Amino acid sequence: MTTTDRVLDTDNARKWFMLALGMLAQTSGAVFINGAAFLIPALHEDRGLSLPSAGLLVAMPTVGIMLTLIAWGMLVDRIGERIVLVLGLGLTAAASFAAYFTTSFAMLGLCFLIGGMAAASANSASGRVVVGWFPPQRRGLAMGIRQMSVPLGVAIGALSIPPIARDHGVSAALLVPAIICTLGAVLCLAVVDPPRPTRADAAEQGLLANPYRTSSQLWRIHSTSVLLVVPQYLVWTYALVWLMTDREWSAASAGILVTVTQILGAFGRMGVGALSDRVGSRMRPLRWVAISTTVSMLALAVTAWLDSPISIVLLVVASIVTVAPNGLAFTAVAEFSGSYWSGRALGVQNTGQFIAASLVPPAFGALAAVSFPLAFLVSAVFPALSVPVIPDDHESNE
Image (cartoon, rainbow, N blue to C red; front, side, top):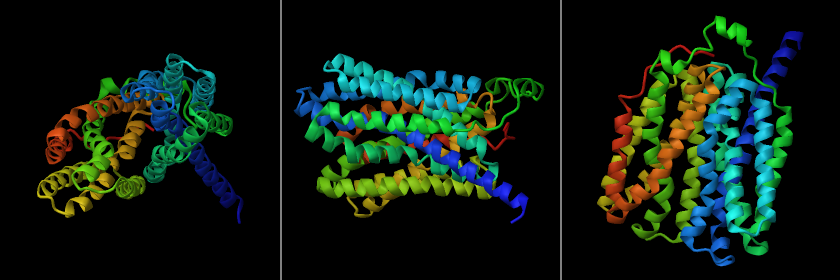
């Protein structure tokens, strides 16, 4: 092996190591943010909270993350990824340990809120690590792999938190995110910030200019993502309920199918990312996914209305297709905004998606109470509206 080959192998190994650390950071944050929901049974049955009160309590991490995504993004743009990841995960771990010692519901909610505010750090910083270290022709696949972090974090929380809460109480279950986030913070000390030009060089190259003022590209991608989040969260939220109420499946069978669709959806994100690398475009595959989402939700609505068994197959298809665009849009935002604006841009991207996602359960719950096929049908309007909004590919600022 020549010296050049050894250098290339070392550089390639570093890229994948950075991807692994980025995934670890995002997964750690997801365990805290999404894991709180798995405490609802213990909060309700053991601590006597009503279901609405328990639901409000475990929603605090999501509220926290919406409050600070843009602020963390601005900090990433200023000081880099490694410090933000270590600081953010360290604060999340501290909030988890504080929650372990509290006996007050008000203080527990405050710990959840602060932990969510801190965990938001991983969203922008981990994405920037991946985008910064991988070249464009491999970036789509890498980001698709990174996007598997959230379902992985949900799975870890689902497997560990409920049984610990049942057998040892809520406080003991809170040690799960505390330990995982502590480990994440320590390991993220090994993160190497991706190379980028100095601020002086960036200013000469125009990379410090506000990309929102020079083009509508980012706003159109943000708008597209908000529209595409609607069918995604409708399926995520109500697939289990629909299978049990309209299809008369058992809770166990419905749960298994939903779990399988989540796994398939995670691999779907990888596949779409790899496709975008192959065709050299993020926006064309995003448009294909938007069209596919529209068709799949329409077909699901019709077959559900007809009580056709094909509707089960279409639910699986919709579950895969609706989650596919996340990595594409995330990558496109980072590439177009550049290394001195991508933190803020990714914060705006995620904030819009979280706000839209928080509105889906109550709004479509009212429609589903009337008719699930009606809810599926209305959700198909949103990806259809996104198709003309999706911009063409523009030159990357990376």
